[in-house]
Amino acid sequence: MADRLNILFITADQWRGECLSARGHPMVKTPNLDALAADGVLFKRHYANAVPCGPSRASLHTGMYLQNHRSGTNGTPLDARHTNWAKEAGRLGYDPVLFGYTDTSQDPREEDPESPWLLTYEGPLPGIRPVCMMGTWPTPWTDWLKANGYEVPKDIRYAYGERKPGPEYEDGAQTPRPLIYPKEVDDTNFLTDRVIDYIGARDKPFIAHLSLLRPHPPFVAPEPFNAMYDPATVPGFTRMETHEEEAAQHPWLEHQLGRKLFRAPADEKKLRRLKAVYYGLMSEVDEALGRLFAFLKESGRWDNTLIIFTSDHGEQMGDHWLLGKCGYFDASYHIPLIIRDPRRAADGARGRIVTQFTENVDIMPTMLDLIGAEIPVQCDGASLRPFLEGREPATWRKEAHWEYDFRDPADDSAEKRLGLTLHQCTMNIIRDEKYKYVHFTKLPPLFFDLEKDPDEFVNRANDPAYLPLVLEYAQKLLSWRMNHDEQTLTHIALTDDGPVERRAARY
Image 1 (tube, rainbow, N blue to C red):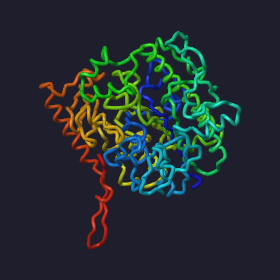
Image 2 (image 1 turned 135 degrees about the vertical axis):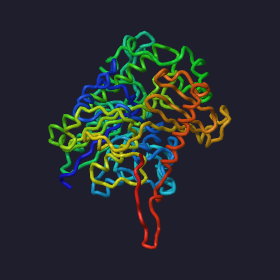
Image 3 (image 1 turned 180 degrees about the vertical axis):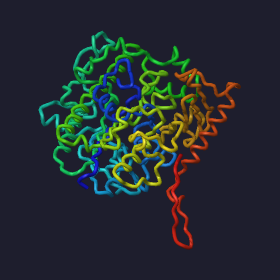
Image 4 (image 1 turned 90 degrees about the vertical axis):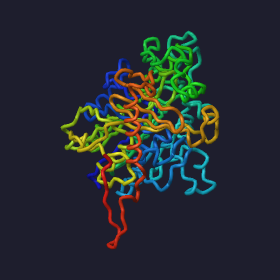
């Protein structure tokens, strides 16, 4: 096993796909991730398969679409019968470890009734060993802060957003208020240091999952990142003139904009402050990852470590008057993906930009392929290895797909407002280079001409000129779902000679 690859699997939470200077973003500076892309492969059209965190990470870690893993909301248990990349790597002798969180809701059928994991959706992915587990409750970090003389809030969940005293930017301050803790000891750098400590103490191949919270809210950054970007000059917002005009597009959007948690503030200065800090948190993550990459080089591990950087989903950040992640807009699903493959076979593809559509369900097959593990039949994605080696796959998807389950088992407001049952609170999306089709279980569909309307303002679903295309894309979506029905045993037949297997390609 000594010559096997190491894997450093990094997720930064809620990172929009265009927010890399390597992608030509007009403001965000990410020099270390840019350098990683120059020495690896940048996937330009990479998409999450679900939101929010729990459902998206279930897809990321199992390689399965939501329609199959069915962990549709934060708190919906992930069926224990599904395997994941950590379990499969463990079968090869690896010890997959976690720094951060996976937001895995445990299967209650497999847990003791008194298990603490039944009281939270933030459980660990089965098969992964938590070394420094943090989430809503950042106990390892806040304990470390207290041990080093820093005060922490009584409710430690607020440590992520504890700000220095003084007025906020929208109240007249020149810059957004910074985090009370210096950057060297904030949650991003704390976790990064723990990963460095762990790797530095090992002499065997490792698989480490570094799951950083940032740039997820609260949008509070330590100095100097709080003031790195001027709120007055951040790019504007993709939206109609008013909430009401935006809401007229569709009943679901009207419902979502009626929820205070998801509606962007009307105060322009406040919204610009949030965006500036969002960018600052990205640059802080980039700086921390630069330290981690430098350590890998200095310790002689760089040339034997596969590095994957991506996110669980994006962020609306005021576009369409929304905050957070939800619905059908690209801002919530288009995310970054950079993979640096150290193998000699990947040398010819360094600096490559892939424009084919890739998805988070492809991450698990890629990792397993490169460490020599069999890719489970359950995986809806496919290995990205051909792209990493400068080759083109024989077949590949021509669209991106995602799902959003907006049911809330604890709140029936969506059902009441929209006239739906719990199981009808779902939407499915298919998009390619030209068009996007959005199908609801029991609400009107949406259709966007992305060449003429890249900002997704004009619904063409009822436009007579587009009806043939609407039908074509509805059929594409149906075919996609049929092609990805759960298939764990469908490739097996029991015969007179015993079980016979024949596996089929997805595309």
